[in-house]
Image (cartoon, rainbow, N blue to C red; front, top):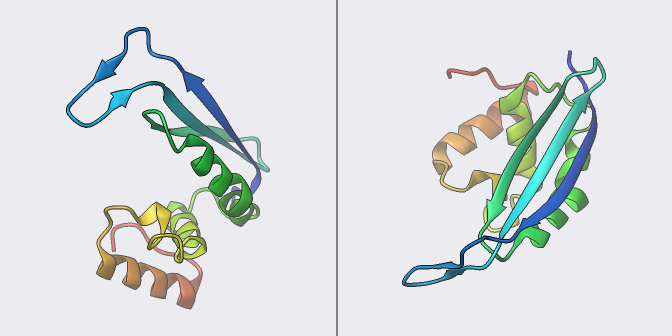
Length: 124
């Protein structure tokens, strides 16, 4: 098992060199949320997401205050189970923050499998 021992979340704001706009919004800055996960056996990985000017601090707060703690002790190799655990932790947050765009029925099957077995196999 590659047990997650730490999760570090940070927000980096990048100002654009040139102001960009379209019909509905102005790209005033890129707020990039970085998440670095480290395992007990020394593996380390960083992922990111970004906004185009607003909401980055809210995403950071959700990660730090609610989701990061759910990852500690989990097997980093079991991505589906980790995803399902984060979905369950955010279920009351607009239908699950990590479930944006996902098929509801597939989520329900995946969550049921996690409840029954604690893991989900890829390719099911």
